[in-house]
Length: 170
Image (cartoon, rainbow, N blue to C red; front, top):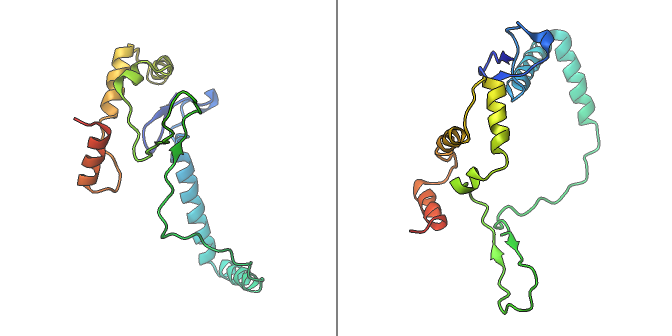
């Protein structure tokens, strides 16, 4: 188990990497570092005269190509479709109104979280990665605390409050 140089997350790696201090985690830091290095290499290459000549030839070849057939763009002014969920056909019921499925936010209630089959798996991961044995109640408390974070949506505050009140009426 090693720590990521960038974010500090502990993760499992091959035993041959034991003792290395320059590893990055597979949760995005490794990919980001690879991109940054590639951008630096590319910028250094195109700063040289031979790189500039190669880029000029590549751009000239690109401009000689035939333009692809134009594809009509979708109408961006139309409102997005509302997804509806059709109830199963039941002859005993007289109403046939479809139920609307709102995809604005995801709400996890504590009862569903406590009954989750992933809870033992999460406990095992915490024990493997951090070496800390937690009870189901402690894991639930940590999850509950992390679920209390504010939304990072771009909605106005009043829209967020009205949406919350719509989902949880008084």
